[in-house]
Length: 283
Ligand SMILES: [Ca+2]
Picture 1 (spheres, rainbow, N blue to C red):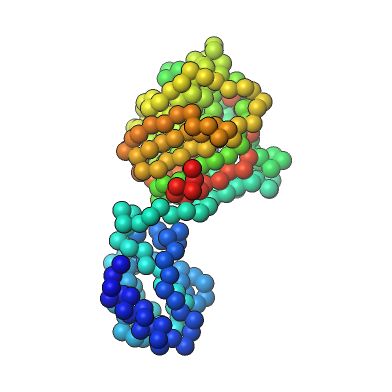
Picture 2: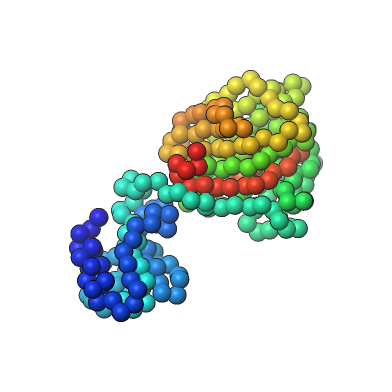
């Protein structure tokens, strides 16, 4: 806590003709740290508070100092100096119940290299579906890939991705966290078909397009059964939960933040009730 800022804030509160308070609301502070001014019109300004002269706040944003009149500020959220000095943020970062006809621009579809066939992602009956048997043909049992779909922000750090996922075939599928791009991310993969490398459940890292197994058990899944999946990324820890049981865990430092997603390998599936929950609450 910067003591000078508390002093200014107290002065502001004494002066204030508008409702003005000082609060700490970590969920509103960006991952890289910073101070948030909640404006009287409801908008947020994020930066580093540099000074206050009784009438104007000086907020530094990307190297530029903005002078903001006191009367336009509703509240100040002190963000601290960055991630290390903060408790984890909690709250829902993202949710999707697919109550619409189209997938929409918040999701990006990416088919993996050397595909046999094309993906068939769609929204149907309140679920996200992938209905194609698309799979990657080069070194099939190294990659176990076909297509993936991603959403969210490269800035999301510590969170849990949860969803109800139903395999409608017996090959491979799962979840993605800390996605950078098509060659760099973590994923949970499960495969059932014994003729296609199963049964297995894995946490994997893709780095530079190459997969590496971080944790594995030789179990598969039941086609047609709905699984409550939760993939937790907290600091350098990764945990995979299935129906309330932790089934895999791993440690890796490569990707501290990134988007979320789902993937299939020669397999169709449905996905419902997608949530991304920040911080330890995601567990
Ligand atoms: Ca198949």
